[in-house]
Amino acid sequence: MGDENIYVQRERKKRNEIKYVRNASFKNYIRKVLSKVDGHGEASISETALKITYDILKNFFTDLSSESKQLMVASKKRTLTAWDIQQAVVVILKGDVARHAISEGQRAVLMYNHMRRRT
Image (cartoon, rainbow, N blue to C red; front, side, top):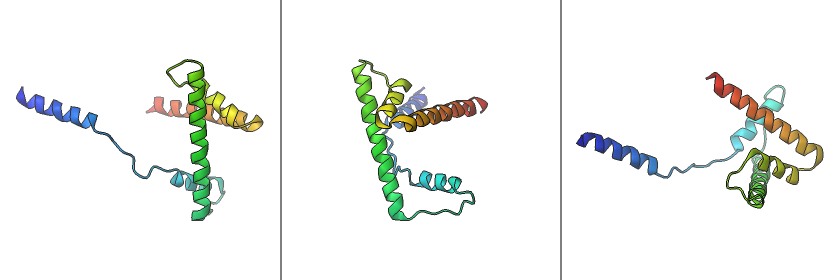
């Protein structure tokens, strides 16, 4: 029984440790998307252009998260829902771009759920 307590304590300690993500960035994903968009996969991007694209994405996600938080607080909810995200996208992006972004996001979530069920 004393040995079980040691293992339980180790598990609790592991669970309570703060896990930090190092160098989390979209740079690798930007390169992957660029190679998929290019028909031959030979496209490249300079470091300066990569940094600019990364900053644009980072600013967009910051704006999106702050806007969705404001919508969540305005509706007096404690849970962020898909509706909050969609409305934030409509506020930040305008017109056709917002509609396409929402439909692509919904399609990505459906594909993710489908793939998750298969495994």
